[in-house]
Figure 1 (tube, one colour):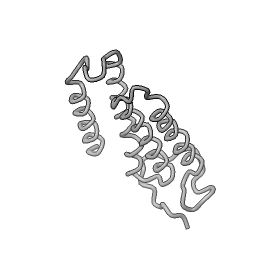
Figure 2 (tube, rainbow, N blue to C red):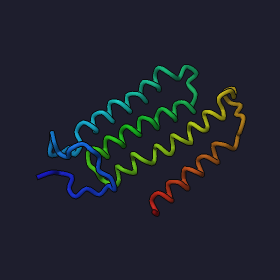
Figure 3 (cartoon, rainbow, N blue to C red):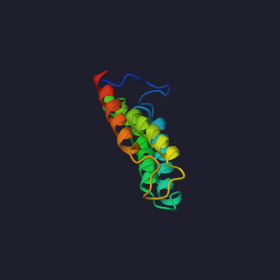
Figure 4 (cartoon, one colour):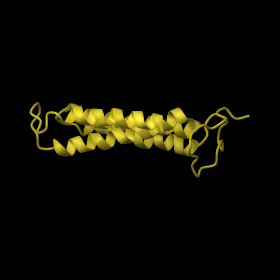
Length: 133
């Protein structure tokens, strides 16, 4: 008997399900997501943010959340964790757009002061559309 049946995500990956454990659907995808992606974000938080800027902290935290969400998705194949995997990827995309637009801006003096509000609004719209459709 396996733990996470029925699978409610819209995707199933190439790894055999429940190969190693009855509690983890895709064992190798789960640990590689958690260690590979999340540790990259944690490393960035502590080693690649010399100015301790909030915009960089946010981007690296999103990478950590992607790793955790991806591990949850591969570990369960549940729709909730699928959204926890996919939505942070959209958030990271807009975060990178912000980092590129504000790359040369001094701390506390943004080039585009309204850009964070616009990007947060886009993220809210993306999230609403994601859950509606």
